[in-house]
Amino acid sequence: MALVGVPLALALASVLALALWSRGTPSPVVDASGRPVAGSLSEKVFIDVHGARQGMFIVGADASNPVLLFLHGGPGMPEFFLSERYPTGLEEDFTVVWWDQRGAGLSYRSDIAPETMTVEQIVADTIEVTRYLCDRFGQDKIYLMGHSGGSFFGLLAAAQAPELYHAYVGMAQMSDQLTSEMLAYDFMLDRYRESGDATMVRRLEASPPTPTGPLPAGYLAVRDAAMHGLGVGTTRAMRSVVTGIFVPSWLSRAYTLGEKVNLWRGKAFSGRVLRDVMFATDLTGQVAALEVPVYFVHGRHDHTVSYAGAQAFLAALEAPVKGFYTFEDSAHSPLFEEPELLRRILREDVRNGTSALADG
Image (cartoon, rainbow, N blue to C red; front, top):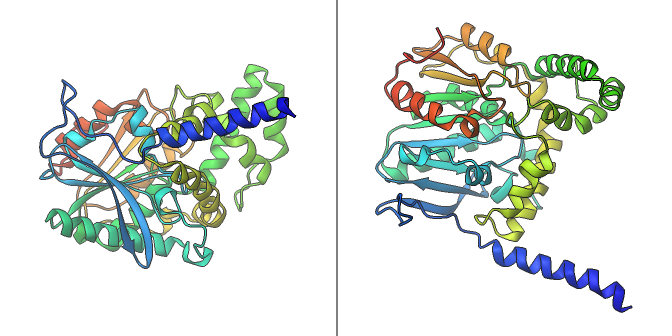
């Protein structure tokens, strides 16, 4: 009996240590000497958004800076904890709002009705959060950036309420995701055949995606591992979702232990109710024009969302200003892989409404 109790005691001690580590507050913005910057913001905020309590982290070196609302990917995968591992520096130029969307992370609740988890609702939530930020920071407009799954909602929000945004930035911008998955599948199958990885080839061949969707369960089970194994997933250097995303989420100090549990519950929940709809929607047929400047930033090695698809989408999109920017050393997350280049684009082009740095 004593031997049985040892693993249990170790498990309880680990949970307690993790709970104590998970203080639930973001780190302050500090200067080069490690002192908190006067007038800076670093806080966790909860507000009511269309009847649902939703959370966000707000971080900035100067509260008078322009506001940048960041829409995370997934669906249902918050990214603030990744910014702790991969500093972006965006807080120097903007007041950055890392909002956890309805049903995700800080905004997940076990009693969320699945019928409220719709594309229309999350777009409406995005616009409502934008209005809250405009009111709070006394700004008529803010900047909007959507990453991957967040780019799906961000593009639609910018189309519906252009008066609220200075510009829209799509990072790994979705267009026609089922087509993107077909292209990614062919690429991965070819690469694994070339490398002689018979196990991965067998797993991919067993569940190919189809242009009509939904994506087969077998493909979803192998997709992330296959992409990360080739360096075409979240980042070029990330070879495992477990070590690259799962473990860092539990080591973050900005979420409490309960919030970390909800982060992964929300990821599973959001995927179940939103993925098929999002992937089956061809945004190129939904949005033909935007009334705000539009910027797409995309990693050359990204196969999670099609690089060529995003290029073609922007080429056809009508907008007062538009620019496409290739990140040569990035896969799916230029924000975390080449942050200084992204900061330069945001400072010199996006904030000035120009596209001088865009691809030729």
